[in-house]
Amino acid sequence: MNLSGKVAIVTGGNSGIGLSIVLELAKQGANIVIDYVAHPEATDDLVKQVIALGDQAIGVKADVSKVDDLKLLIAAAVEKFGRVDVMVNNAGVETRTSVLDTTEAQYEKVLAINLKSAFFGTQLAAQQMIKQGGGGRIINITSVHEDWPMPGNTAYCLSKGGMRMLTRTAGVELAPHNILVVGVGPGAVATPINLSTMNDPVLLGKLNAAIPMGRMAKPEEIGSVVAFLAGPGAAYITATTIFADGGIMQSSPGL
Image 1 (cartoon, one colour):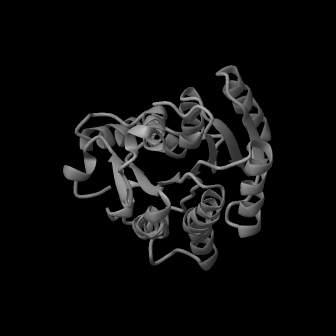
Image 2 (cartoon, one colour):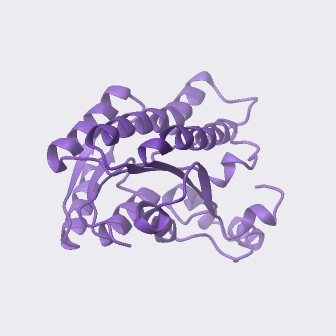
Image 3 (cartoon, helix red, strand yellow):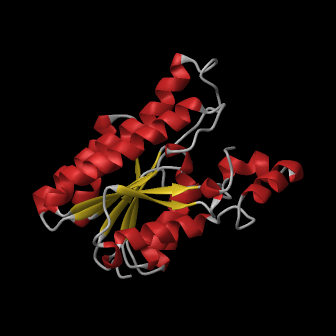
């Protein structure tokens, strides 16, 4: 893989899976725009790590649930680096609430951050890629739950299911422009969002037992999939999702 000279935007890029995506893309030579909404100190530290790898990076505070902020994010990338080659729609939240108890505010927050941001992030990045020419890659970080029900987390599953169809439809629409749209669907990943499970030996044991590979994914393992999809080796992959789940979707009725 070689992303030298490429410019990548990663939403929600200063923690969890997003942080690992930033570092993996930078290891392949990409310059990075790191979107964040909180913890600017973490973003500053990550920028230093990217620079230490020999690449350039900037942090941009932008609430990706707002289209105007997404426009500012794209504009910042173009102003600093002159183009956008890779857009990673990674930002996401969940409420762990069921269809019976999810409030309107919870529903709107999850759908806005997870799905609305991916839709308009895809739209705005594609418009810039078409304007500059040369094609590009749009990578949506979804979940096994784009396809696999998770009772008690309904709005999250709905948002990821929407990302599934966004990936497929946008991938077909944008293929004539050589803009590839691919989803990455992680299973359980060892990130802060899963600390409650990781800190509970009983819950962790149950989860690991359900995963054929016997463990949660490391964040960098998801980052490496994204880096591959951003590179030349994935030049004929679009309108689909690559699942990185340790085999769990094929062996368990759901979690």
